Image (cartoon, rainbow, N blue to C red; front, side):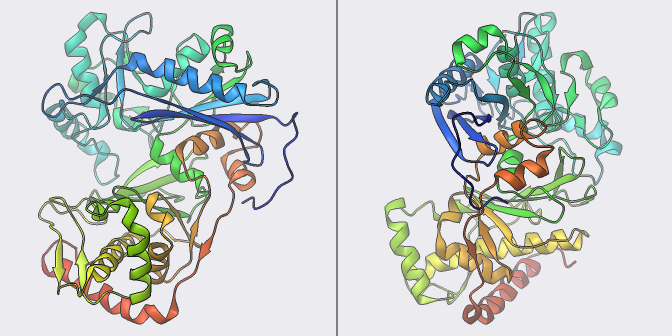
Length: 490
């Protein structure tokens, strides 16, 4: 990974990554060494819930926001955008929009967390049980496949195609239909292992395959920027439009975790572990699921129901003082599993799981420290499960998410894991999309893009004096989970 490079010149070619998130669009332009040249964002209207379990957004707002952010980004570049040779789009996983023959939305986009078709997804799970069994490619209650069936039943013959966010934006950029990538297609019923849509599931649901786009590998070309889009965005006509990946996958590759054995732990609202394996992980519990790597490997991962949310009762302004106090006091005096919801989904699956404490905090700093340790203990359980599934975990753990900005939390994680933790610069979706735009344009493939463009950040080493106490507390934590029947003995 790149640590220091010469300053860019005005003639340096560049690429752009676009992140269509829930609340905003973010656009980032970087050169071949990963240096940020310009960036901009534009707000999106918040999703609305028209009924219990629904989540919708006006898809007509996407392109104006992308267009605006692109225009401001290219206007800030030395050559006004002419240096941009490729662009890629990443978005939320499972968000879809029904479109007519003209490519325009027939209704609002159905968001990634929309549960209106949970019954259809359950039917899809049964119809595809032989295909999905134990492979982590299952169709959950919020999968896009059920929502695609809902779109067909709602719009009937007016429905021409169901698009994920990147294809919708890709059509605006190129002025013709574009393929989806196999990452965004996963929750719509695409079997990345077999390289095909799950046709028997589609037949069982009465969903014609023609309603879904063709599928390609992330980083491959979907088309080029047309004259209309060039005029309103500042991108050069003929600029390559490359296939992206979901926001979670793009965030992973943005850390440089792109080769087998490399993993990243993301502490946002929840904790997410994602990595790279040579072979598809078979996990009978369903805790892991896998996307396909652009270079043919696999991206196993899982998401916990706890993480940064354990600090939701603390105002952000107080966090630095609490971190300092927690660092000064050392390991917590008691054990805390800081789960705030009912049930856990990773690194173990248990609907009965609930947060607990073994003992009581001595003071506020002790309680804060115990919460940080509890998430670190879950991270260790996750990595141990990865290794039990036969996947080697190599080198430092990459760290991303808001939790990685806490130096004391990162040090706790390193000590609990007994391995260094590397906090990487620009561990964000838009940068991951830029790496995909650079694959095959500025660099040979994704691995080469990451090697040249990801900027190494701080390496945090374990704290030897704290390791014995944390090892003992971790043992009590894991034993308590097993005693409650939530954590399997294996």
